[in-house]
Image (tube, rainbow, N blue to C red; front, top):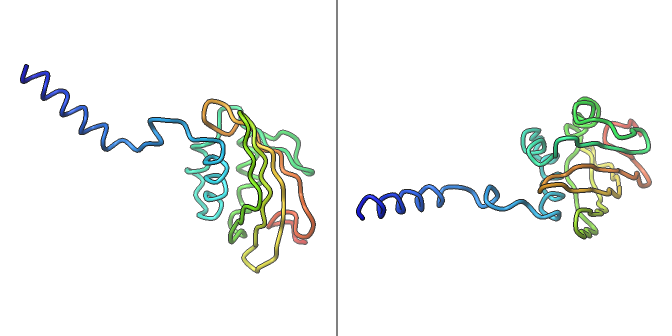
Length: 141
């Protein structure tokens, strides 16, 4: 009896230290917000942790590129991105749309809309649609 009680106490103690995100998958809204937070913090590991196996990215200048190509081609934009401001976020089931304003380090505004799909609590794809002005931070516009 004491051994069972001790085991239960140890298990409860361990579970108390496990972050809640490990117990339940993030919602689509949480995933999208975490995506942009990773860019603001320049934290590739945080971003990679929420991207599903088989992740693809598309935009007017990219067509369903792989995670490897995304990291090489798109991730460097984080160095010139100051912040994001979500203007509209709609999630339904395994898909979501977000429109945001964002600023480069030299305070140039860019506004895009992105369509995300989700699988097993991670982002499976991102399709970016450029708005007016600077399309993406390193575009030299």
